[in-house]
Length: 259
Image 1 (tube, rainbow, N blue to C red):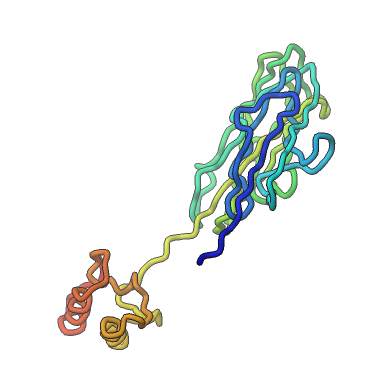
Image 2 (image 1 turned 45 degrees about the vertical axis):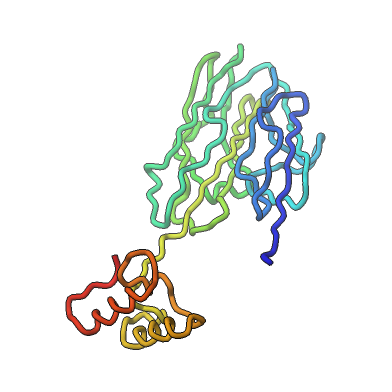
């Protein structure tokens, strides 16, 4: 029987605010793929934490090992701003991706009645390793109704990984008096593996040893072969037609292996 990997429920307590999603289930590795963003009148969201007061900040790199309740923390404010989008998952990419086309622009808008000064944006944890701020705020100030743009893109040359690269962006204003957290994530998928059709023994060559191995496979099905490479006629299945096609490959110049 395959080993069962437990998943866990993460329950979001808005702690005086409101949130659209109150429970998310982890994947088998203990990660959650996104973090909901709650709202509360006259307050700025200061992140999800493990305790209602204090505790540890929850990020997209947090690993949950049991069912857990996390709590929204708030900073009361008379000034306020919004960030659009409130979180962002960059499109999945493969090694060699170009970062310029992946830049995401975040729009920060003053929705309060007073001026906001000293706007700044920094990454928490090690987020600056995975992402780059390409259009910094440079201590921007905003009048009521005003907006400013912030550009962010993934770092170049990140290795392929099934676990998302995650970061938490902290945007503050009024010397830290108001703030908002923006979760980011990015996945670099492994590059597709090319198939060397006919290389049944994975030695990097296509020769008579591979043909002999295919003959043994049909005579003794417990013989191990590279099944993808054995589909030498490219029809999606491995059967006697592949053996005939493979035999012709060695007997007749010009016979092509694969689709």
